[in-house]
Amino acid sequence: MKCPFCKADNDRVVDSRASEGGFAIRRRRECLGCKRRFTTYEKAEQELRLRVIKKDGSRVPYDRTRLLEGLHKACHKRPVSEERIQSLVREIEDEVVAKFDSEVPTPFLGELIMAKLREIDQVAYVRFASVYREFKDVSEYISEIEPMLRDKGHKG
Image 1 (cartoon, rainbow, N blue to C red):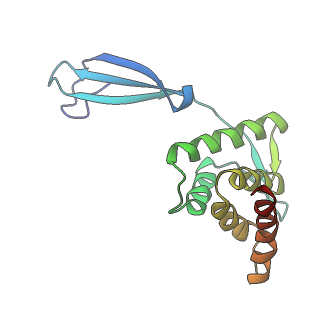
Image 2 (image 1 turned 60 degrees about the vertical axis):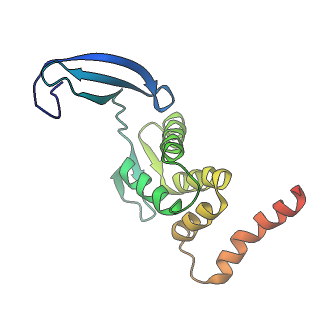
């Protein structure tokens, strides 16, 4: 591993520990040339060779980045940590891989994302639902929120 500071290819590992819920290894390294320390992460490469069947019937390769972008937009300025969003992506991918071999329909993916978001943050859920379900007016927001309000009334 080349040192990001002096570019020497001579370092030693000072500390290793599990990270990201055991899905990565964090290593602290010390460059033997300039004596500075830096951190690296090691992850198992998980290739999802999935294709997503879009609403119009077209098929596109699954793109983890698109899922992350959608979740980041939904959770913007909400009390949802980056670690929780990454964990959510892993949960969604694990469930998709368990149920589908090579192709996943967008309705399954969208509903799964909404179900997971609803458990985490209701505002993020409504934001995502409004885009995914293409809300046209306020009445669609109200019909989405009313069941959550009824559930909240029954709980407390």
